[in-house]
Amino acid sequence: MINILFSARAAQWPVYRAPLEAAFAAKGLKVNLTDRTDAPETVDYLVYAPAREDDDLSVYTNLKLIQSLWAGPDKLLKNKTLTQPMARMVDPGMTQGMVDYVFGHIMRHHLEVDRFSNAKPGAWLTDWAPPLPADRTVAILGIGALGMACAKVAHGYGFNVIGWSRTQKEGAPFPCYAGVEGLEQTLAQADIIVTLLPNTPATEGLINKETIAQMKDGAAIINPGRGQLIDDDALLAALNSSKISGATLDVFHTEPLPAEHPYWHHPNVLVTPHVASETRATTAADIVAENIARVEEGKEALYLIDPTLKY
Image 1 (cartoon, rainbow, N blue to C red):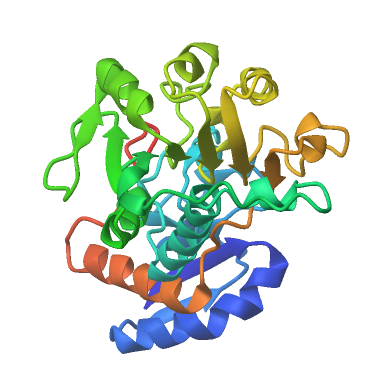
Image 2 (spheres, rainbow, N blue to C red):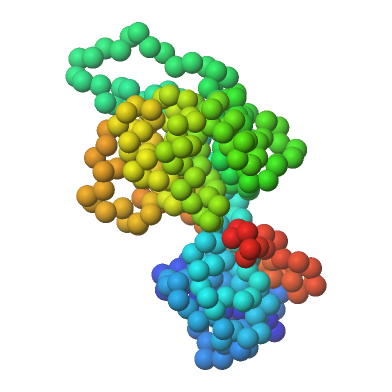
């Protein structure tokens, strides 16, 4: 019998329980699935979306794997008691949700919808039409599973897509750049920039005064990645000077975003409350079951997090 502990907010247990049980049964796994235990040393697997960052993970002395329900590991990696192998969540439902969000807002900036929503009554704007998608360059910063999915949809629609990542990405159906010089090349070409990078020491404050200066005048930014990727003061200054034409922001340094924050009141900023994509229980359960089955068969879990790289 495989002992599996589900550890997340109390409201998530009734949402996940049945899909997990069905997924384990479909894999032929005989499990004892529970949301509480008095014997943490007996737990084989932890399905994890912590309500707090300071859980004591050292009590789980025989864990084979922590399966996160989150795509981003940065909050989990702050836990100093974490020593066990951990896999991030790559969920088809989450991926579809992110593609919907990103492509929807690419189209919003491409069509310059704010030009009309911010127009004064009676301003009949007949002297402007958007270019064709092939004449817009969309840069995806972060070509992981989510970034690649978003990039392929935009590319398939006809946008001129380019990508950037920390290391060179091979085999993409569009140009990809890497490293510091590659970032400058990417930013200089882009009309719309999508940031889908993890929060690591190397990416914190990546969008700052210096990198914004490398962008085209009038570029737009979409950030459903991590709030820490953006220097807020630098972005606000660029918005106020029209260096940046608009920003769609879903993630922030402090969440919920304080009511007094300037982003709420800026006419060229759309704030969304960290809703770009959520893990879907029905599809995530299949990933959890697949990973546990792999480990039980002596295989390496999918999507293992490298604690040195922070993703």
